[in-house]
Length: 398
Image (tube, rainbow, N blue to C red; front, side):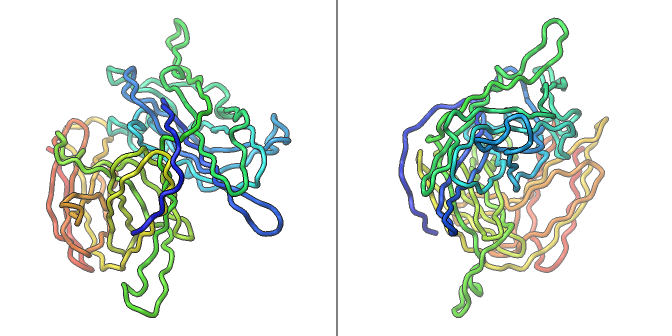
């Protein structure tokens, strides 16, 4: 796998950031365009265990259009909302992608986040469904609803101050500094909690941008067939730490995205060392070492070969619970990267429910299944997945 490092830039320190990438490129017909790509990240905050915000939609505004109407606002088409995001999980360079959009060159004045009123279906840090769309979990573990004045109607707006302009054949990288600690406000004696975002625009030169491609190997390496792009492949940057106190933390997924119809993907990463992992249905997973530096733009090309698959299914049961509780299943596999493990698949499963997943059996059918649930001991099961067969694995937390 080869990639080409491009220009390096100076670093800027951030708190909570919404990363914005404007990637200029020429196009036919006498006009020009660029691409706006958004992500979300954070730094440590010790006042709360979690701060959840549900974002329904992400939009950008072009200069010259009416500011107080919907005219001129363009939504990011590939933003997969609503997403209920724990701002405090997005730390140490972790980035949550918010989508991208192709834009004509020109001046863009504002970004806005449309705040949702219904949470997504994923569990929170307490392994339960979200009780509210927007809320905090305090130091005692209490979930407290958070109001977002006008966030559902007009959105949370950020003025670009000239930094959001799209220029032909030029890359401009920005972040929105979203200070979570200052943005969560307790309203006087009422005790009501409001989200009043404190956000400013900064440059984002302290990250590394991956603009890569995943493709199907031509006829599994045989001559006479061209490689084809793989749409919907999952690409993630992972860290393997064999010294973690809990097995569930031995493999951490720092950032994850999917390829578009051309097999292309974008990842924004804090500089460091990662395992770059690509998976796709019916294909063998592939992992490679990735060492990134500030200001780099890398273009990894990843080839995946086809693989037979097997099915793993079963039920999950958690004893001693009084309300619906989720367990996290992580399916891991050894690699050629100095014996490190990677996560090939993961899923949240509600106690009492069944699960089923297809797993590639090449280059190996052997997996480590790590099951974790809040206030329960993490479990490990070593399995061998039968090619084109079915393996039953029930998970029981006593």
